[in-house]
Amino acid sequence: MMKLSKVLSMGCIAIIPSVFFQCSESNLAPDPQPGISKAQAINKIRGKLMTMNQLRSLRVAAAPDSIYITDPGKEGVFRLESTDTKSPDNTGTTVVTVDGLRYKRDFVGAANASWFGVSPEDNDIGPELQNAVNSSNEVIIPDGEYTQLTKVIIHSNLAIRGNPGRVKLKLTGDNYISFQNYWLEQNLENITIEGIDWLVASTAHVDGSYGPITFDGPSVKNLLVQNCHSVHTSPTARVNFFFLKVQPGKVTDNIVVTKNSVTGARMGVEFLSQRQPVPYLGKNITVSENYMDNCGFGISIAGSFVNAAVDNNYLKNCPTYGVEFAGWLHSSRLANNRFEGSFAAMFSGNWENDGDGTVGEGTRMYGNSTVGTCNGKWEIRNGFNMIMENNYINMTGVLALSGSTNNAQFVGNTLISTTQNKVIEINDVGNLRFANNYISNESVPNNWFVIWMNGGAATNNSFYNNTIVKSSGNYIGAGNGASYSFYNNADRNGAMINQ
Image (tube, rainbow, N blue to C red):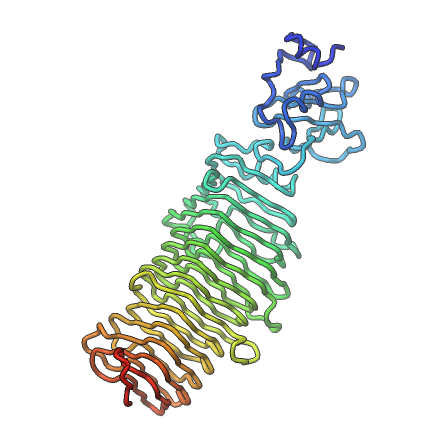
């Protein structure tokens, strides 16, 4: 039998029954597989070019050691694995012949989803993408727009990647989940989802947390979601972009959600854990450099978490909250985020517990700012021993402090309200310290108090070295048993305020 390399060099046409067909070097894919050039692929073929169906119909007697598959989008070298008798035919990396021989794709690096039949022409890539995920630890989705009607169940040690901005999954029909875990899986580790865009246009009628990326049930460690984009246009499926729930008895660690863009979701990013008898089973959560526009909640971290960081995100026009902290949070951080537009509250904090009560070991807020004047307030309920420093908040609402926000510190902030007759409102919260802040509602014509305290628990609050600016009324006031110390504070001209 003439070798293929000789056939190709002669520019001939080789014909072998049920195996060969008209061929030339141009039959080969421009890039047969990652890391293998066309010339290398030719050298590996050893004389056999086939379609996938021809290989499946191959009998044992005619079985060569290697085959080059020519099906468009599935091109590549497959080698006979004579010791394998169990692997299923998955189209992409394993092909089973009529006599039960297994041919395995010869490649290094990521598997291409197109090998498994994922195509923009498919009316549901879910089953084919599931096949790719089941067969590989790294899957690349080629550029294109795809329809996904069936969710894909993911596993540990998996990376799913696309070219950012060039791969779009359209969730239509009843489906609004793209990637989800098995409910009963005990551990889910080492997951990367990167560079995928979603259009959530589902016809389902649902209002809930589940969305394109959903984890609910297992322990989750080492998860990265980055450079993704999700646009939610469905009028009936109000769902999140990202959701991770820690169930009782499970843990989560080292979760990073970064550099994503989300528009119109119920929540952009939500972390949730049920109240648990053992606190802080969730740890090391980072949500950074994301853009959230017109999401009901931009970012929500609610539950038993330690070392949660929400940094350098841009939150715009989130009707409920820009960022929410709630539950048992300890050593959490809100830093260098920007807020634009309208919110019920740019930030809403509602802790149930915050660790050992050591000042500085709770939540720290610094470097956050508004773009222009934001509609909404900044509210902290049960903030415990938090520190809020060097933030610039220009808002229509107030800084509202209530619940167990005792022992908190507010240092070096600019706090401006453009419509309220007070800037800071303290209800039954004590042992607060305000120092070196700029506090103003000078544009409000009928000011009542710039700072107001109410309730018998609002005691031992101190205000010093602040600049306080008003249009009329009083600088500070207290009622119903509240008390405070007030000294070395100045007006906008530097004159000491006698209060």
